[in-house]
Length: 71
Length: 226
Image 1 (tube, each protein chain N blue to C red):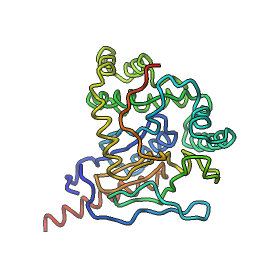
Image 2 (image 1 turned 180 degrees about the vertical axis):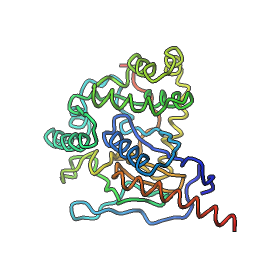
Image 3 (image 1 turned 90 degrees about the horizontal axis):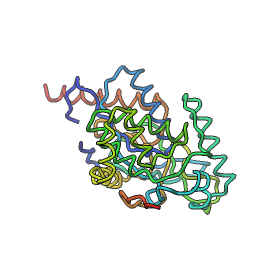
Image 4 (image 1 turned 30 degrees about the vertical axis):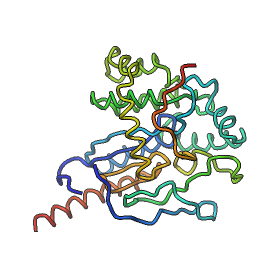
């Protein structure tokens, strides 16, 4: 299944009055309202966390398919 | 989009078993399917929110977010309370504070086996319930085999697949595809390979995406026929 090929501007969202980058910079035509990416750590200090506003985000590229440790 | 007009819409959802919004999003997508009367072919793609957590992490999801991600516990509990309340509004029972944090790569491997056997949706639903409602250990092999059997899989086949990791490449491929698409949050829903819905949006939004995809097929058919 291939995605739409045209490049688009990254979706932006407004959260708590300030524009924040969306977690999505995708090749898709987005439907619905932009979902704000939540800062991943408390260091951001604005009350956001990993799973807010309808989405759970990862702070950085995750290692794919890492085997679980045995312990 | 070049799928046949009358065929089911192709829906792919990137999600993780421990993602509270993903179960909520699943309910809302189901509601949209019922409201529109659309037929869909649904595939769940793998996404790992915490691939570095050990399978036997000794703690709850509160511990994980507080200790590993540096979030104040009060903030974690407040976040969970909000999600729990929203989930209840969608008919889901969450016990997030006592959920057992683990590594979900084995669950994802099992979901790929389930897809091959035609029971992926059943297993996905079962995994969500096991984690969020029953607080079962969804990283443990025997727990996973038990859930697999409940979903119609053969115990021996499930255990063997989890032992030799035959579906790990498929999990990695899904994660890599998500990264290529720029997806770093879930749920992320793709309809007919062209329309995207980020997050657990309302059923109305999912319904709009389904209708838009169907209309696009009709438009493509019309153009082809003219």
